[in-house]
Length: 68
Image 1: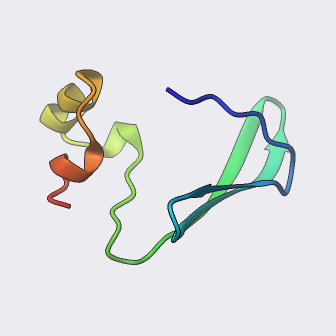
Image 2 (image 1 turned 180 degrees about the vertical axis):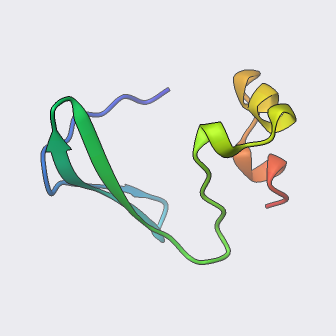
């Protein structure tokens, strides 16, 4: 796992077409903005079906789980 520190307004780029921006920090919570092509699935962990969560826990890539 890569762990990065970012300040408000700073960005992280993943590849050439995914950008994550820290848009708000308040009382120990951060809000992230994610810019990605529409064909790239983005999931919150709690919304993944159970079997996909298990694959993630084993270290499998989300792209292979989501059919990418």
